[in-house]
Length: 142
Image (cartoon, rainbow, N blue to C red):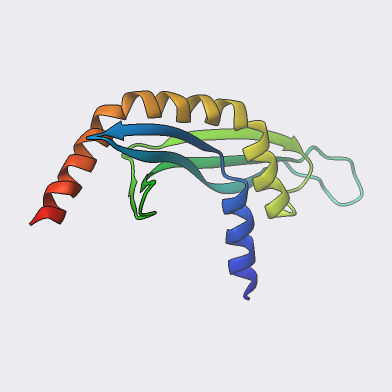
């Protein structure tokens, strides 16, 4: 397994998820909202050789939300990225090293905000979930 696949698997494993149950036309569906965070880091400040300096690392991430509608009976799923993005960021002292750790810290420090955003998105998305299921059923019937 490549290093990239391991990194992506680790990042996906720690992505916040909000799950709700949806019932339509007598069938049960599980709707999961997954936050995907693409992070970047930027070093700010200087430290001349032989002198103390002030360096800090500004880590920011762009959050997108994926909706997965899974039929509980068959296990088949429909997945879609929802429109809109949100930015989260934090600053830490020192140089920008260990990018995986910085990404994990960003997700951990923003987890309460991300969980709140996912719950709000789930409430606002309820009519769209019903429409998506109805559209998928009508296409499958053809």
